[in-house]
Length: 491
Image (cartoon, rainbow, N blue to C red; front, side, top):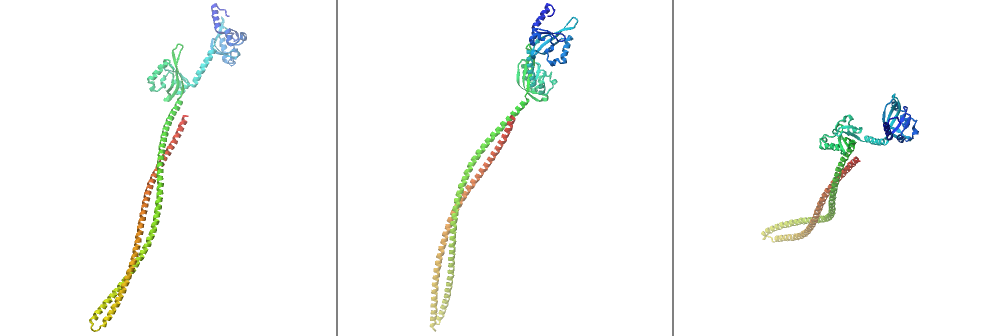
């Protein structure tokens, strides 16, 4: 292919076997290509000889100033090595790692350009996938790299944003700037870096300190990176800022604590409500018994009142009869008074007669003194005495009659008084019955009063219990609202 010595020819032959080789004139026209190049690009030699290099280049790139400069530099004898994207037959993209080598004559003029190339499409695609993954990680995660001693080498924008630092504020600083002083001084922190230097992978949730002392929580992995000789060269950390998640978790925990407290309060309220309800039920039972006792007492009271009413009616009737008897006794006593007056009149008459008799006796005495003279004077006196005696007899009869009348009236008065006494005794009996009924009524009333007081106390206790139950219910309602709000924070 070229007029070289056997050794040089052998070298070129070796390159021809291992590399894709193509030759161009200084303008870019294709002169020849080996089998490796044709295989990579998918062409036959006849398809490309005499064509321009631009058939392997994207049309947009062909029109660019860079492409024009590319061939200008080659014609000027400048060597070019690059990893380039080319277009194979059918528009298939191919990645080639190649060197463009200008060949110059003895005068130093370029007469050919030889390209030695290697197909790196698979590696490039793999690198692209890896780079895409790295780019995706860099877009989605906070990434920072450290030297094995913990010194910051680099950090992406996500990490800078998460911790609040600029890159120039952290590069060259130690990882310990992101931890609390207590953790920095702890044996666990020293062991953390000893493990990483020993090649141990670490993954966990980490509490870190951002700029200004701000708490930052990261879900992170610390990955030891080794070179081809197995030596640790870096520690790269991939992290996700979970500060918001941790804050929600903290709120959920606080809400859960609040819910547990509210549930305990609700349980207590329910227990108290049950106790109050049980007490109210018991009090209601006692109150019901008291009310029944009151009802029974009321029945007894009604019966007692009926008995009192009946006894009062009888007492009224007896009293009316006593009044009638008293009126009769009054009339009898009036009759006795009248009779007594008549007796007085008779007594006066007797007294008068006695006086006249005495006078006659005196006259008789006088006449006796004169007896000798006239005897008929005694006869007259005797006649007068006789008449007086007759009058005295009549007066005595009248007195006897009046006494009999008085006795009769007295007997009637005694009977009337006996009747009154009997009536009074009956009144006493009725009064005793009334007193007994009143005593029974008083006892029943006292029992009713006690029952009513007990019932009132029971009702008051029930009212208090119901008020407590109402308050407990209201508290339960408030607790339920709090639970609903707390549950909303957990959503």
